[in-house]
Image (tube, rainbow, N blue to C red):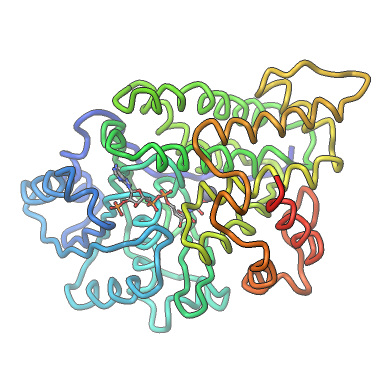
Length: 391
Ligand code: NZQ
Ligand code: ZN
C-alpha cells in the first residue's frame, strides 16, 4: 500500500425529510446570503425547491436563485453565476440537484473571488486560493460530487470537458434523502449507477500491490449496485434499495476506497470527450468506454481481471487459463450494462466512428499519456475508441 493522506470533511445528513433541514445547516456552516443553484426544472416539478426555500426562510436567510444547469454543465452559466454572486454579495452556494448542478456551483464558488477568468483553473493555468463554501441537496446517486473535491465543466467555446480538483470545493455538507431519487427516469438511474461502478473501476484496476482493504471496499460497492439497481428498476419507490445505492455513490468517489493505491482515470477522460461532443449522459458514455478499455488493457494484468471476475461476478476461476476468467468478467460487465438499458457501443450511444479524430483532438493527447494502469498514448487511445465502436 502506498503512503496517503485522507481528509474528507463533508458533513452528511442522510435520510427521509432531511431536505427540510437545509436552512439549519447553511446557517451552521456560516451562510447568510445564499445562491440557490439548480438544473432544468426537476426540482421545481417535484416541489423540492419550494421545501428548500421554506427551510431557508425559516432561518431568516437571504437567497438569490439561478436555475438552468444543463447535464454536462456549461461554462456560460458559470459566468452568470459568478456575476450574480458578486452583485448579491453571496457568501454560500447551495446546489439543489445532481452532479452537474454541484459541479457548476463549485466552479462559481472559486470563480467569484478570483480576479481572472474561472476557466484558468480548468485549463490548468491557475490554482484556486479561496472559495465560497458549497453544499448540496442531492437528487441523483451518480457523480459523487456531493463528497468529492472535483468538478467537471464543459467549455462552450470548442465543446470540450475539463476537470478541476481542490480541497476548497469539497462540499461542506450534503443532504441526502433517497426518496428524492424516486422521480428519476430509469435511464438516469441506470446511468448514475454506471458512473458509480466506473468510479470504483478507476480505483480497482491498479498496479499497487497489497491493497486488500480497498479492494474489498471496491468489491462491496460493486456488488451492492449489481444487487440493488435491478430492484430499483423494477420498483422505483424501493426506499431501501435507493438508500443503499445513494450511499454507495458517495463512497465510490469520496476516495475512501481509492487511498493508498495508484488510480487510473483513462476511461473517464476518454468518456468526457464523448459527453462533451454528443451531450450524452456521462454514465452512458462510460458504459461504452469501460468494456472497451478493459478489453484493451486486460492482458497487462490478467490476474487482477480474473480476481474481479471471481469476486464481483461470481465467475469460476479457470486455473488452467486465467485469461478466460478475465474475459468472462468483462463480458459479464458488458451484459450487465445492457441489462440495465445502457448502450455499450458507439452506435448505441449515437456516437460516430468518423468522429474519432475529433475526439482525440479535444482530448489533446499528442505528446502525453492517459491512465496509469497502462499508460496510453495517442495510438492506444485511438485503438480503444475503435474497440468501443465494435463491441
Ligand atoms: O436538470 P434537471 O431538471 O434537474 O434534470 C436532471 C438531468 O436532466 C435529472 N435529474 C436529477 N435528479 C433528478 C432528475 N430528474 C428527476 N428526478 C430527480 N430526482 O437527471 C439529469 C442528469 O443530472 P446530472 O446532474 O447531469 O447527473 P449526474 O449526477 O450524473 O452528473 C453528471 C455530471 O457530473 C460529472 C459528469 O462529467 C457530468 O458532467 N462528474 C462529476 C464528478 C465530480 N464532480 O466529482 C465526477 C464524475 O466522474 C463526473 O465526471
Ligand atoms: Zn464519473
